[in-house]
Image (cartoon, rainbow over all chains, first blue to last red; front, side):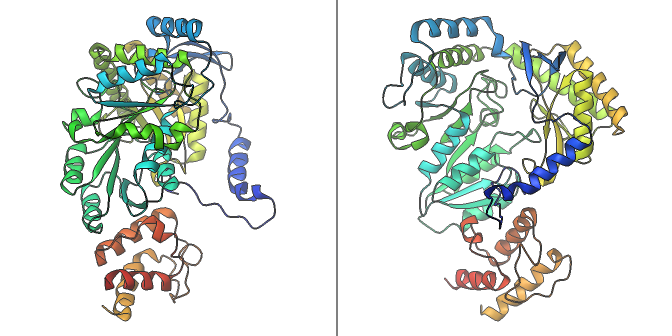
Length: 411
Length: 80
């Protein structure tokens, strides 16, 4: 299995669930080793963007993608409460019928300002934004050229549409260019890239890739889910940092990371973009976000426009965690910190699960990422830092890693 | 380029991927006989694409299960 690409499952028996036997067995083996199930953790109480009670214990959160720590921002919370009072708990409808409230329009307005783009379209999740835009714009006879390590929502968007799908080796500029040049003349082309790849936390060489894509007549879609609010002068993402944002036809993002709530979006300067509201099925055939969610999102997005101090502190945190873990002898996903994701590479799933468990005992939550969601079948402990982690907390985190790493025998 | 020449070239590309030295015939399957996982498939497809300067999209890959089908598909693509 490679990355988040959908797996083809096969089974011969009449029980449709027999195709999952291998996964059931894997899970059984893992749990029989005595570790806590890494995929059924419950947060009993959430104290702040960086703290929660798990198993009755005060735990530092280092795996939540809550990069900018907006989930408990007083202005954000106030906006949500006000919207609940003024507009009720839900819209009970599609954006194109009864589900567009004033808050949805204000949220889209905030996005247009944030990205300085003409159009913004809010989806109910980031997954639906990728699914909807990709499957709708790339049709029969068109070609999608995409990085092999693309997120599941991108692969599923490809699978849902009818375009020819051509993957290239992760972050390989030359492999991308070769494939672009081989596409039959006259065919529509969509290049799909991510700013930050969430598994290893590495950044795409967008400067070269976007230039080459445009030179070859392709439209470019960049998923900036893991960079919004943090990377680039205005927090617009890696494409801003690389100076190519004006050449990106579509930027996809999410509210479930830096923005601190849930929802997804696409911003674009394409003159016909608004027609998407009528033809994009994952936009039309689902209920819109609740009023409180779009109100918190809009408030948070506006605050992120002016968050350069928080951005600077988040970089400090990322650099410190990266250098600290490197000094201890952990193997990391990138040689240098490229984003707020620091991926610690584990020798295997067993050791990874043991380490995850040991860290939780210490009072630290990180993500355990395992195949098939990871590139090259790696087991990763994925850490995502928050601008609200104090410098002291980062030192505590490092100490926890040292204790757990020694206990499990990884360092 | 005729089918025999394509066959010869693909055979030499497949060699480093054929870790168990499976005897290759037209009916040899990639997933079953050669036990290619998706990582191997990606590298192998990229090597074929570069050798013949073609694209084998994932949609096309889904139709190719055996060695013979691959040779036929490449022959058809290089014909044009």
